[in-house]
Image (tube, rainbow, N blue to C red; front, side, top):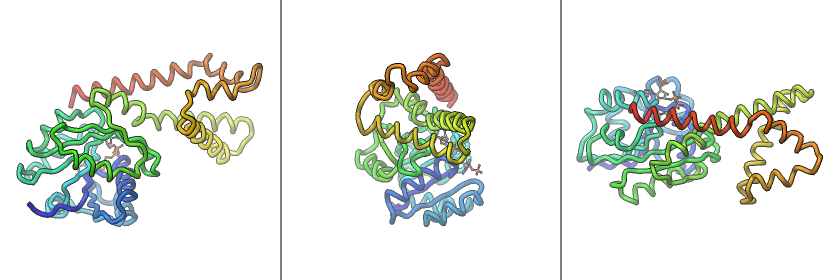
Length: 276
Ligand SMILES: NC(=O)c1ccc[n+]([C@@H]2O[C@H](COP(=O)([O-])OP(=O)(O)OC[C@H]3O[C@@H](n4cnc5c(N)ncnc54)[C@H](OP(=O)(O)O)[C@@H]3O)[C@@H](O)[C@H]2O)c1
């Protein structure tokens, strides 16, 4: 077998770019190979990460022949055509790879049909804050994979943030909270900063105030290990200002809105799994 010391990325959009940054932070010396359908989109990233940018015509020799571990960052609907139409001629039983898929709603049983039987699959469900080491990455894997290979991928992602193994049956739920959660929280931050602006605080300061408040509250939950309900009780004095705001949130259904958002995301992920 050829020496395959590189780590590859195929389909380097929003999510895979963030993962590539995390992998670079975890492994400063690791050779990274990036391939994206539209090459111009990853010129700057390749330079910033000191990664090799691979051309379409040289995908086999410059990426597939050099990498045993390959992250796949195309959209779920692009997975089948990528493997069946573009990669299949270069994949063989006797050069097995470890593929790491971030595709929402694409289960291991379907991922395994995309490659020869000796190849192995890991599913990750990351979120974009992995770029700053503040992400949450759920993962699960094909039970046939060697523990050392899972360990290698864990090491690649050690600077991404929190890594947590989940049984695949819980993957859609984990993805609905952590994968899509940043989008929900951006809306919370936007709403909080709109409120601040409406009370005369300049936009930029309002955004920083709102974002830092969310970061601080999250850190408080993690660092204290306390239930958020108890933390809320500590900052709501009887007849005070904060409890008036809490009451308004309850009246406007904040909890129901958040739970519904996760339910809708979860259902969409289940529907996509059925179509994969
Ligand atoms: N965004 C998130 O927060 C998030 C969270 C969890 C999981 N995910 C998963 O991450 C994956 C990517 O999502 P995304 O939001 O990063 O989408 P995206 O920004 O559209 O990235 C997809 C990338 O794949 C490239 N691509 C498509 N077909 C290709 C092919 N045949 N060969 C090479 N490159 C190809 C696209 O290239 P072009 O530049 O030509 O379009 C694009 O750069 C999805 O499977 C999604 O389910 C995303």
